[in-house]
Image (tube, rainbow, N blue to C red; front, side, top):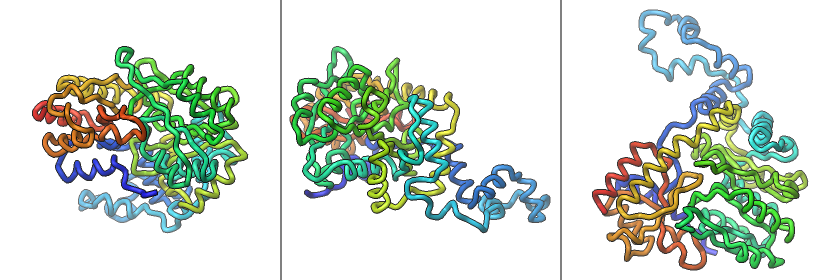
Length: 429
């Protein structure tokens, strides 16, 4: 197969080239969670656990007095110079650590999972720290399945699911979510699912909820159906749960591994990217049934060795936050969702309000300037002529023509950025 650059990242490059407001790729322009950032900084400078504890309690007065700078020109010392004085000459927190993750983070992941889902995976035998959810999906595919095996992917999908599957010689089989505009949601055709999963060559089912790009949150009845399908046809479920804290208006994320008979056949993929506003850190994890862990860790070790050690320390600080922090994540995104939804509807788009995640999958056929265009042409028109970057809807489909009417907008940017994008849409459409 020919491996290509992802269209999503291409649209970001084009947004930069054309000075467009970037509502295409799913990363924010707001600062990551500070406690998490400080956890990484203190590890980088502290070098050892003792050094980290020392940095946590060192005051500015102590640093200046140690250097004889308590008065005089002390206010002229740069922050860089100050931090250089507390840096530990001894170090292991910027070095190789266990390939499958530092113990502190694996225990934090286990505690976090128990707190939110009532199930505590064994941090020694089930939790593997990986380079973000993208690597997590890749090692799950490679360790669970063999070339020629089929894997079910719900379309529209994140483009990495089928492309990674094909890289490893797997065969994607597609089932389709379809928009029910009257009900304001997206629905999965259960007969279509049954017809696909009953094929003996199908070995796994990728489940992404909250869903990118539609914002669909699969409810317990829908997940029970998927769980029943996996049990009946002896399938693995590979769950992508990175948007678990971004749900709106009574919708809640449910943990498929906690459904009856699913713990032994579910591989959970998660990361700090969305929860911590830190997509560039590339810290994620995979939770596996114990008998599947060794092979997954071997694949991970041989592909990338490990995730960055100091950033793992930062991730510990994130996952140890109070429950109120996680419960408050969705509120900011709800405001942004409604702002962008209203702006898009004002210029002619139609869209069901996302139930979770931070994307709007909007139908552009009622926008006069775009109605006759293909999704790619519509997206390129918006970048070049209007100054707003989106992602063409057909990029999220492999079969049929369902995607020919959609563009994906991301509302994870700041309110100011979203407002600027709306103003450009008003002016240009």
